[in-house]
Length: 88
Image (cartoon, rainbow, N blue to C red):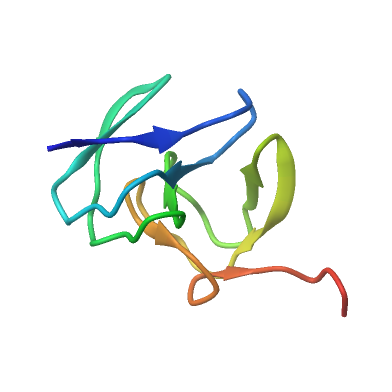
């Protein structure tokens, strides 16, 4: 099922889900449709690129952190697989 998501800036490497989504649901991106590889809750991030470990994450046109591990597009991005050194 197609789910609503938000991508603000061409630099963004994640989409923000505007509704709860299930594994196999699809989001639309400028690069085409992406199937989610796991359940993702409302307001959480989904990868819209295949990430390598230590690759920067961009949301709303700003760097918000970096990946702790490699993950494929469609993956839920949160503090279990992304790091941020701000405030340390």
